[in-house]
Image 1 (cartoon, one colour):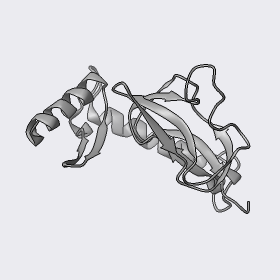
Image 2 (spheres, rainbow, N blue to C red):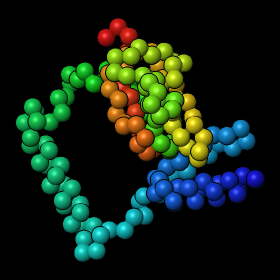
Image 3 (tube, helix red, strand yellow):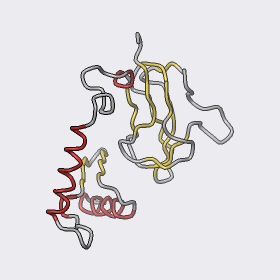
Amino acid sequence: MDAVERVRQLLDIMADHDLAELEVEEPDLKVKIRKNLSNQYLAPGLNLAQLQAAAGQAYQTALQLPAEQNEEAGEPSKEDDLAEITSPMVGTFYRSPRPGADAYVSIGSQVEPDTVICIIEAMKVMNEIKAEAHGKVVEILVQDSEPVEFGQVLFLLEPPGD
């Protein structure tokens, strides 16, 4: 299959799954495709001036909120210290190697960069996903057998020493 045919195939996949962005790296092809969302149409009955006015109103309202209601500026929260493990592809998330087996990791598990933490099935291929970081699993954000998107956060890790 030549590169043009492969890109057409990737465009079809994006359209079929309503993806905004797709990045593929293969031995003979590296491509990143992103939809141009600026060409989206406005809902009937709305014009650009109305949308801009509404956005400006929302911005002013956010500025008037007390500091406690706004995100706490200046002092980072505990979650800011957590490392995110994201999905490298679109597919189906599995916590264990097969149905009924123990999960690769659970909350509290210590992981190393080469620790397999889950499987993502994509196009009938089971892809083992590694942690790629040191730390302790503090949150699992996806349910078993749930579809995931490229870049979706799957796990939160507490780095060593925290």
